[in-house]
Length: 144
Image (cartoon, rainbow, N blue to C red; front, side, top):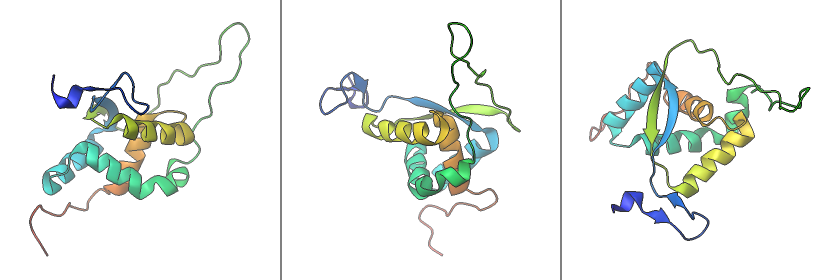
């Protein structure tokens, strides 16, 4: 079995695959910026997501604004539940990242704190701030 899919059994990762794919949804234009930066710098999508979260995690509350609160109790036997659909100005596409389970736990903790558990909203916000539109990425191996 390849190392990227070995199951981690030690230190809290029991039953979680190392490097397993995680899908997030990004706007088409943000995915393009992510791809351009990856091609220009040689960094993976996963590494760029970590870079973006490292650069923005102290400002996520301000960047995300007021994210809807968790649903409360409703009449009857079910909790009130939003449809889960958010209106977006642009189509969303799947992007795969492969974080180590410990790093995924950090992402999930940030998502729980700032976006009621929405990984895609968290990552898209951090990337959007980290990869501003209209600013080309520096080219790999080229010094100014």
